[in-house]
Image (cartoon, helix red, strand yellow):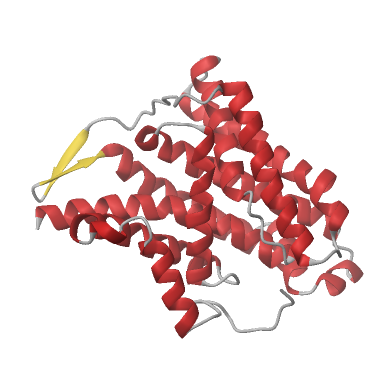
Length: 288
């Protein structure tokens, strides 16, 4: 029982990180019909920015996190406004190649600025607790608690704020949103900024467990699988898809070590075979 609980907590915490990054994938896709394959690398950049504020410049952890989120929100906004917007209307293949290229650029620049050696980012969430015989790190509990807070804030923002409602309107019908006076292009850039800020939080929560390095951006591949499993039209589905992969990984490592590195992709393959639109997506037609 203790082993089961420990594996479950590890899986839930890892899955929360996948889910937060996957929500960034889904937000951008719902608004712009683009798949941003640089989402994981944006998370990586955000973690390095937080490291700079907290460790290099000595900011308080919470203040440094908020500052990093603000920087990444502006960064995501500018990536869309300056780069991505230029190829709107081009074939999807061009957009995919562009975002993949951006990921390579972000990793290279991060390596030049912060180096290739793993860096440590300390958080207030230190120590362990004993739960049913399992030793649970407070950092993992913080990941789960932080995810609940972030998801709640996203829901409230999208449901009740003027910008959140505008984002939903633009994602449902771009032309109608434009005709009622919503600045669609500005909203799209705002979605990119929000997705970048969310990914920054995911990276900072994960940092004490994995350390920080340019290759952390490859977590975005698993987050993409999570978004596919949940359905690219569903924010809750993205989070649940992340939890599914996150929980499957430690149990596979314990009982099926041969497939531990590919279990998430096996689940994605099975879901695509049985329900191509994803487990929780609303079925509607979109050009892909």
